[in-house]
Image (cartoon, rainbow, N blue to C red):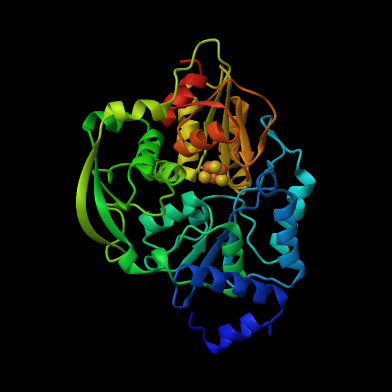
Length: 390
Ligand code: F3S
């Protein structure tokens, strides 16, 4: 790989152990995937920071980089951890409080912004063509598909290395020629009423190349966020070309096949019916809610009169607690459980439920696989309606 003189000095250790280690990581991975050079990034987003996922070894790695002098060289945000930062949630278990705080303290002392959210674009929306180094699959696919930014789907250590060096390797989706949509995906009009989380899981699992989503542009951004996150969960996708949405000149098209999604395709992804004997947890907020979605949930809770059956958990960035305290206070007064800076996938449940009813394909996918829970995917309004007893 070609390196500039400055990059060679970083690699040689002239600026300390942490930067040299980070450069070595980037160069090795870049060489392995055939990158010819490094590219400067404007924003790094660090995933893989939840103690319940990364454990002691992950904690030690982060502390090593901190103690070795690693500091943010570019704007850097942090993904959710495994604790509810408000401390009020009755559903999320804060048993790893001390360990998570040790991770958070190291990251914050390195100069990373403690947003603890998987929607970093809420804090800094990227520009079309801007190079990023983002971990967190749901954020990566959103950045590439909605904003036309350029980022690969990085693991936590690579995003960390990019933050403290300011570079990533130029390969994959950092190159325009690799952003080519080949399979057109259309929705049967009947399917449009189906939960977008299930549609996303189907696309993720069944389409192997970059999909071109036709007829999706009227979906709201909240639904697109859930759709894309679900695709990324079941199929490792990092970009979808959404006609009428993805900025021009950030992709090209060479369509060689077309598929229709029909109603029958989705049943397996939606999950089994909820029985009246099941204890049900409604869950909304994977990825974390945008403020306009938080307002939508509030309006639905007003409409359906508060939680009366099972529970309803929503997950949001910690900052909303103060910023939208009227909405948060109202929701809590109507029985909604709010967890901030975390989510059930990266944390531990305090209580067991028979079924998690969610609008998110990503949450359903991981709660089934990691936590062994029964899940069912429904549109957002149906989730609220159910737990409100309608
Ligand atoms: Fe975010 Fe957790 Fe879902 S980190 S994307 S809410 S799995």
